[in-house]
Length: 155
Length: 335
Image 1 (cartoon, rainbow over the protein chains, first blue to last red):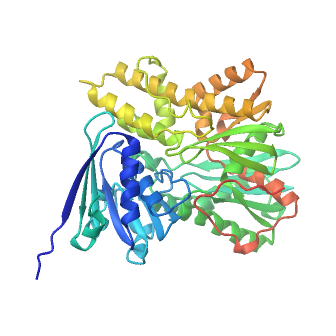
Image 2: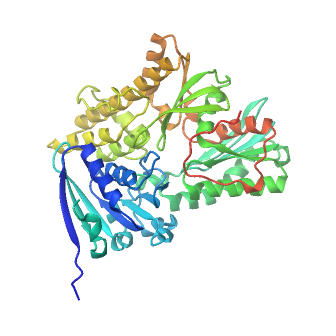
Image 3: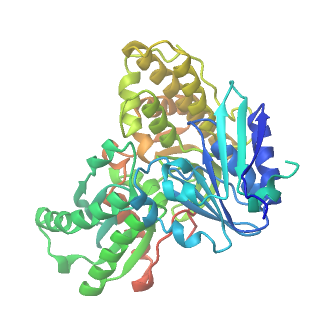
């Protein structure tokens, strides 16, 4: 049996719009429900990437920061759930949002500050690490589980 | 008509009794200071605190008002936008009371309530007007044709201005909520010490963006060898200047474009002294009349909900016990 191993693609973007375009192309490749965790410091471009992914998934609405209301749902080719764990410290708070019901129901769940939930992080199909390397440059590492490797092909 | 207003969309449990004839009869708010520890509103904690606070706040409000429950003629409650769990607590309470007293119940859009908070000073809203709604969760420009007719003409593309204040406050270790904390630190700082970016000013629309500012502040703070109190004040003042610059210029440009002669502020960030001062001064230069809510009615409060609900109840509206809550939606027109 072939060994199941995560695949990682590393991309450097030089501007906000490049980061957004990367998100669009990632969003276009997604054809099923999955969970994506985004990890990176304040200002590293998580929301920008999410905006792109949502566009790629066919969301027509403006995608705003959900920091305040924590949880937002959009309609794309598939339902899209946008979560922001910035304010949350406890798994219990995340559970209260009802996110667990949306994993595996065909929705794409996008989690900013995904590393703040051990559970959500653990079940993520794709983990994206964003690193600030210059004023506008970002190093973006996209790691996917083996059954989602196709999403990254040729990215 | 005597109306009870209930506001639980975020972290404040706030109730008020309002009379169409006499104005505010009584209002009372329980703040959840516990969130200071977390640097933000935690939904689980917020919902539970609303449950704990609602009945005691209601009892004290009734005692202070000197009127009886039977004298309440209608009930208004914020049913969105906001935190779903928190909204549900207020709406469930409102339904129980409406059922027990056999009174009409209306759901009030939280943003319409903020806009109408401008009437709590005793003057009717002068229209047509442009209203800048600016808070922790919202940064929008509305054209108000008349009370009940709203058009969203500009919106943030990413973060709300209040959210930018919160995040910048956290970067500078100034506490929560960020608006008042940054304003206080800024009062002893130089607003021109750092030139932070003003996003979207060159764009030919009335949309705004505050995400880039937060990033710029972060990068600047990280480039410094140490954060001395003076540097913190200077960064706070410069960041506040950038936020206020964008809000004022967009609002004024919007008012000019729409040829209105009144601009209004609404929402929690409307309490910012720099924003009030600058928008007032810039409006005056163009013969536009500037208005802002009384300071105590800028943040979330039951009085604005009661005041807005009175308008709806006057039209004979009753949402009944099927009233639902929603997390996000622009204000819809109803006349």
